[in-house]
Length: 391
Image 1 (cartoon, rainbow, N blue to C red):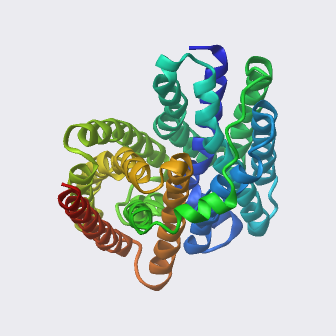
Image 2 (image 1 turned 45 degrees about the vertical axis):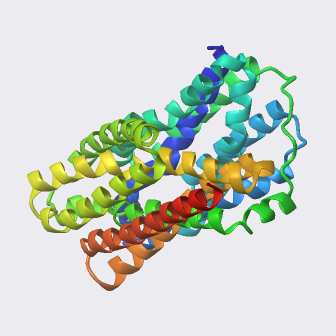
Image 3 (image 1 turned 180 degrees about the vertical axis):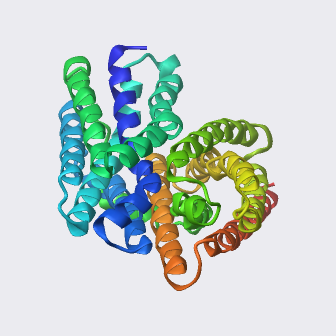
């Protein structure tokens, strides 16, 4: 694999860290900026909305720009956003910094896969994309717990300064290593994107993605607070628990992809959503007991992100049938749906924390995942019906 691909992987690592590390820092930020936990949770929601807007809209608007210089501009925007977070004097400034960083995130992953494939031969394209996205997985396993530890020991602002430094290294690497003559993809017009959103079957999959992924974030957004306030873990151990969670997520992501390949995305998603809702309900009861809570979190991680490969494969399969002229656009909009789910999940979780109890986020998240399970079964039934009609 070319060295330029490793620069993209480092960029993905930095971006993944800044997206998810906020979960481990929410109690610290809430305390330092004198805001409520629900208000701190908006730092997750608004970042995700920035990604959701940035991925489809800004990708379409920048379709004709030189790929290398667009990549460098995005990493510069990412660095600026994290430096603004580091220097934020108040909550409002931190919110603006998170939105700005989210916009860069959305476009980066929209164009990153295309750049990765153009750096290698045709037979290595899938491996190139997988290597770039390894940066996200490694971020969950190492970047998030390390960033949480830095934030707890040196202040949450220090975490964003470290992430900015990673971004600068990735920017320099991309400037030196990424070639300047990368071909641009055909621009995905806003009209083409809207046409995808008029396909009911694709809308159903986007709903599965947003609701199924968002159900996890109702509770996950406040996981650090639950572990501290409900389970009784000391703040110093949260980073280690996030590390355990990240390892479980990485394993679950691989397992989820293999399951989708083996039994098909609908059957795989049925299994994963069923298990995920069950784990969230169980966590409601195990959270007050440290050892049981830790075990439940470990199992939760295995299913929480295991739905990602199945959902992404499924939307491509549906798009190839319903909108063959816009498969990439449909796939990109599913990335936006993931982040809409994160945003809505965090907002719902914040409302629950504000009105009820922290631990109530678990069973509410479980109910939301059950809705995604029902939508999955509906989509599978429609697939079977269409197959019979075609036959």
